[in-house]
Every structure is written in structure tokens, then in C-alpha cells.
Amino acid sequence: MGTWQLAATAASPADLVAARLQMALSLGWHIILACLGVGMPALMLIIEWRALRTGDADYMRLARQWAKAIGVLFAAGAVSGTILSFEMGLLWPGMMGIYGQVIGLPFAAEGIAFFIEAIFLGIYLYAWDRVPPKMHLLSGVPVLIAGTASAFLVVCANAWMNQPRGFVRADGVVSHVSPWRAMFNPAVPHETLHMIVAAFMTAGFLVAGVYAAGMLRGHRDRYHLLGFLVPFTVAAVFTPIQILVGDYAGKSVAALQPTKLAAAEALFRTQAGAPLSIGGIVTGDRLRYAIEIPKGLSFLVGESFDTVVQGLDQVPRADRPPVMIVHLAFDAMVAMGFLLLLLSAWLGYGWWRRRELPRSPWFLRLAALSGLAAVIAVEAGWTVTEVGRQPWTVYGHLRTSEAVNPAPGLWTGFVVVTLVYAVLTVVTLYVMRLIRWSERPVAPQEPDRAHEPEAF
Picture (cartoon, rainbow, N blue to C red):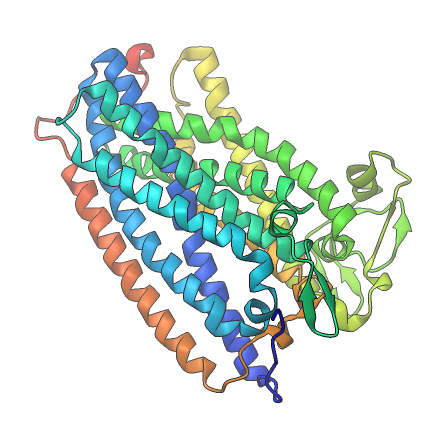
């Protein structure tokens, strides 16, 4: 046991591309639902707690609307998560056949967390006005805990692909399997923390962006103000934390996966005093037209301007990831993070000075786009994590070309899955729009109170 006989013929280059595109589509779609599944229950509980504490009807209306949205998003996430679970075996039998026994523990535990989340979300949605208010609030706590646990466990599996541990493989035979050691590998701390903080940021900015857009259309009542302020404040609090976590993650990647860091910075030559490169175009083995901060990368990696940073020249060309993609994705992630930090500081300054939103219309315009910026940051960060590991599926042990299903016709599966996600997207957005329309107050529009100190 513990062996997997690969097919005599490998997948064609075209089918390998199809498998990669299908996995990228599924992961890119699902990761946004996963972020909302972690962050929105926290927002829901905060808003319901405020409703119980203050007796404010606007808080309670928000809590009920957000609960409906979470139910819809959970259903959509369950569909995409099921697709992903099948894809792991259908698209990558070379990995699951060899290493399934090694990495099965976090997937099994995630299944338990998913069912706990589903059970308590059902209780929470059904129990409105059927149990005491405090009991209802407490019934939502397991939803938050289980959703966060699901994210943690899935990222543990991904971290193992970046830092495989917990097994010995010799002559194609996997032995001495330690699932716990595999699950809690060296990449777990920075990957899980980075992802979970990103989830709270993304959920907060996405929800706030909806209400910012409503305020731009003239809905300046207190309901919309609270719907904007609460999630935006939560996201704003997590944004500087994410900057610090990102620095920690970068240092960890420099130690554990120096090739990924070299690709992210398009650093082709190992050197002391390595520059921090922003933008640019990769041509051959050189980055051109980039903005360089002299010795910046060395300082960030080792807190010394003379730190030696490994470049791509230490890696055979066949083992290098696609540098241009990783570099641009890394720059996009960092850029979005700092733009969101500045936007958060703008609100913080205005609220500190006058207890009101910034008066410039540009603040709400940018706030309405903050959710999109957070999504770009998450997708770009996931691209760095996944594409930066290439050409390996299991880093240093199994190439992606060896893990893919050698059966022909993978493009057909990609087309079918793309159509499924297109339909799922349209249906989800349609139902969310129905929920959004149900928020509209029946009473006449209240006067603009967005700048009144007592509004929050």
C-alpha cells in the first residue's frame, strides 16, 4: 500500500493547461465565498450584539438582512466546494494517489467543520423570534468558529503542498506517514494567519462597498450609514494587522521558499543589498523599467541592508515559476493592501477629528470600490502562493505535469465547469440583488444624517 502507478503516457501540454485553468477558476471563485464565509458571520454577530445592547431597529434590520445573505452565500460556497473536492481527485490523481494518506487529515477535519457550520447556520436562520434573543446570538458563534476552522484546515493542506512533511518516500513508496506532522508543517503559521486576516478584510470591505454605493445614490439614512461604518471599521482595523502579517509571511517565504520570493521580486541574481523592485517587465533574465528601492528587499528579508537574498540564478531554469505572472501578482497584492490602508486612515482621521465621514465625495467613491480592491488583493495573493510554487504540485517532490490526470479531454471538463460557474454566478447575484431590494425602507427617506456625530 502507499504506492500509485502513474499512467505510462503523460497528459498532453494542452490538457495540462486545461487542468490548471479549471483549478484556477474553481479556486479563484471559491476563495471569495470562503472569505465571506469567515468574515460575514463576524459582522452579523457584531451587528446583532449592537442591536441587543442598544435596542436599535436599524441594527436589527441589518442583522436580519446579512443573515439572509450568508445563507445564500453558504449554499453557493457548498456547491463550489463540492466541485473542488471532486477536482482534487479527477484532475490530480497523481498527487492524491501518492499523498492522499499523508494530507487526508485536514480535509477530513474540514468536512466536520463544514457540517457544524451548516447545522448551526440552519439553527441561527430558523431561530429568529423562536428563542430568547441572547440565545439566538449565541447560536451564531459556532458558525463563526466553524467557518474560520474550515479556512484554517484547507490552508493547512495548501501549506503542506508548499512545505511537505510527515512522510518518507523511496522508490515510489510512501511510508512512515505522520498526518499531524504533515498538517502542522512550517508554512502553516504564516499562510493561515495571512488568509484568515485577508478574509475579514475582504468581507468587511465588500459589505461596506455595497452601502457606500447606496449612499452615493442618495440613500443617506442612518441604516445605510451603519451598514457602511460597521463592516468598514472592522476591515480597517484588520488592514494594518495584515500589513504586519504580510511582512512576517514574506520573511517566512524567504526562508522556506526562496525561489518563490525571487520570482515575486523578479530577482534573477543572488546578491547582498538586493533592491525592492516595483512594476517592470521581465525580458529574458532581466527585469526592465521597474522602480527600484536600493537595498530594500535585503532590509525587508533580513533587517539589514547587506542581507544576501537568493536569486533565480540558483535554480535550474526548468524549476523556475513563471516570473512575470508572480511578480505582477505580488505587486498588485501589495498595492491594493496599501491603498486600503490609506483609505482606512482617511476614515480614521475624519472620525477622530469630527466624528463623521470624510466630506469629500471621493471617499465614498473609493469606499464603494474597496471591496473590489480587496478581492484583487486576495486573488493576487493566491496567485503568488500557487503559481509561485510551480512547476511543483508538492514542492520539491512532485511536478504538476506528473500529478495531472493523463486521460484526454480535460478541455471538455474545463468548458463544462466554466458554464456551471457562470450560471452559479448569475443565480447568486440575482438572489443577492433580491435580498438587497428587500432592504429598502418602506417609510419615506430620512434626511441626510451621515455627518451627525450621533449617527454611530
